[in-house]
Image (cartoon, rainbow, N blue to C red; front, top):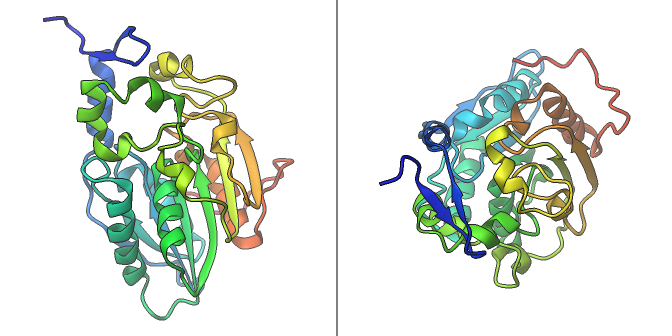
Length: 270
């Protein structure tokens, strides 16, 4: 038995994955209970933000973003869900209504901040139903047009074991769920990266053009989006970057990003 497990992609080539990558996936996908973060009472708004993590992750991965949102006056539905156990359709229609109920009946506006597949859950839900008090949506590194990584690895036993049915749905082909959702009718701002981590280098080589190690810059785009921003960060940790958090806060307030990177220094980040 080899020291390292293998992914066998559709190209027929075998790619070796270090055990450290599997340890990383295990750590970042540990479950965490759903929580409601109360806004800083000095800055409290009548607005709630639903925060959704990506595939194979947990609410822990979004904790810095959620704390910053709460520190800036937003009530935050900080949500964990079993991203690897169920298809996108099931997850969207179960997780998002639960998060909306956590926001309560007193808020005037509900926003979304999502990472990776969390953006696809949001698109699916809002394609099926509407939220009367819907505000703005910020998507971080979303596979809005799928990913070539899925195209290459979806038939791998290891990939299917690690990422489950939802991981099979995010390819670039016409059968992908992302191509069934259409143009958005609500204000969406998208931030994506053009760097990759050292352990995503082999994945990055599967993707044409600029990418973040999982998704290309071009495939993060979405018809009907209100604004789009590329930052020098990677897919795995983009949501933890101060620059990204500040840009997210700016879009929620103003419906646009700061493209000259004139970032405010008075936005509290924890």
